[in-house]
Amino acid sequence: MTTYGVGILTDVKIGQGITEYLQRIDATLEPYDGHFIVHGGEADVLEGKNPGAVVIIEFPDRTHAEDWYKSAAYQEILPLRTENSVSTIFLIEGVDRTHRATDVLA
Image 1 (cartoon, rainbow, N blue to C red):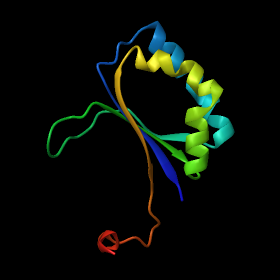
Image 2: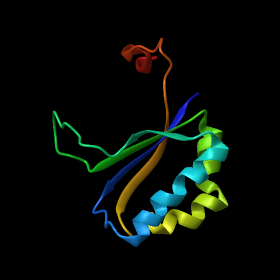
Image 3: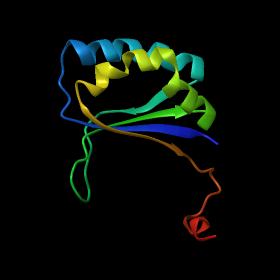
């Protein structure tokens, strides 16, 4: 099942660290077939408060997502993000197009 890496970032310090992280992250995604589907942008908040910058990376499945996060290449650049932002990061599986809201009740 398609798995998404979701990041919610606040207090991002734009500078050399984040710039280097952004310059290097794409190369870490390639071997795991990961690609950005949301990368920041202006949120049109309809309810609640703005959570921060939202980033969503799509992977073919959980194994690819977990392997990317644990990879030496990503672990090498991870401090560039963690030292320059406050982040909530998680993996979550998607649902297929036949999914209905009541499916979660089963």
